[in-house]
Length: 111
Length: 115
Image (cartoon, rainbow over all chains, first blue to last red; front, side):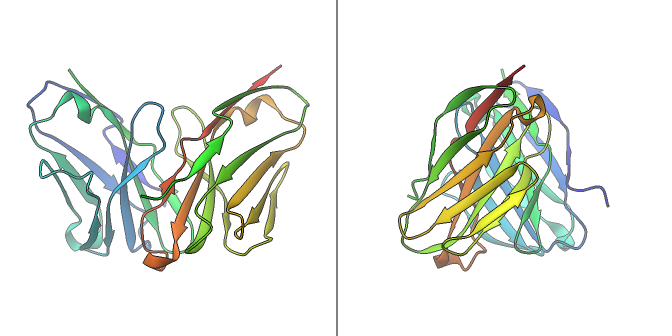
């Protein structure tokens, strides 16, 4: 197991388009988290899964955002009708306890 | 809203010098504090998970201390090397979520080591 993988590394999309990112966690980690980092800020919590159940969603996660983790394995984060304000680094992390292992992130640019 | 502050925002240090920076967090409802190092184009790398007041942890030339009563943690780097250049993030977990809540990050300290 080589750690947490995220795909794609970079995504440029036009405003109004839908995008989907994928995260493959460390296989024995039951917890999976999505974070978003914008310029000059620390990463901000978006949502959290324990196995396949989505247990918490931040108020930052508008109804244009949806995340899934079918069968408690990989996770996808979809953003519908992208806006320029969605441009950010999207980080995925998995955890068994107590530490977190992060992926390298997906850099989204909305033009 | 949890307030996690890091200072300074950026720091230029001469190679070989030692340095330190601060993370402050809510002193009530403490569960854990994490430190990460994040180099450009790489994943944030876990440095320390700190849970007990008075904790001191060390990893090579990097060490950290924790004061939960006053709500701060210090990260120290001894004998800075160019490879230490990175953004150092601290992240707080409150007790209310039993540790399952997401991390609340500070904005980070951007460290540049000058040869």
